[in-house]
Length: 252
Image: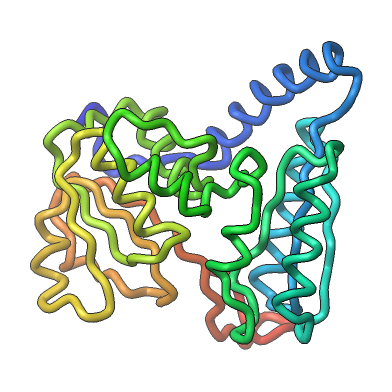
């Protein structure tokens, strides 16, 4: 697979290189258009993981020259009120991208809200049209979901040949599992998706050449679940108990 044994794929290093490339591209764009690309982020509620994600996105935007505006709404905002906010952003020509931080509160239909985002501003690539294009051969979506695309970039930077390889994904979410499976399939890998109802999951993971773990369960995959020379990408972010920390928990 053109990757040395027991090697750690340095995601931070790869991310830094990509950001430097983007910074140069955006500087050229700014000079041409005399304005910064602008991203508007919608976040509802106070979920700690969502707040962390949005904070990191703000930081990344600042590093590469994108204007980032975060619109924070109370958990009890109605579905219609949220859709009105999305429509305002769709109609605002100064806003180039709209990102809705998921999950939304249970009283709000995520699919309905996401469907209101203009396809050319759907930077998360979660709209039905972008996902539909991703699922079809010889179609190019306007945007591809960022975390799945990040997984593919890691493999690309390591020169991993995906053709014919068995890729196993743990997790079937619309955010990571499903679009990652489509990207790997488009790269001509043989793809298996495992989820909470999969039987004998460890027998499937043992056959994986590439294993992508994208589930909300810390320490799920054990050493005996994997074979020699497997490439593992751990997407999941979870908090676990840690009494040595002031908060009583740590991120893994």
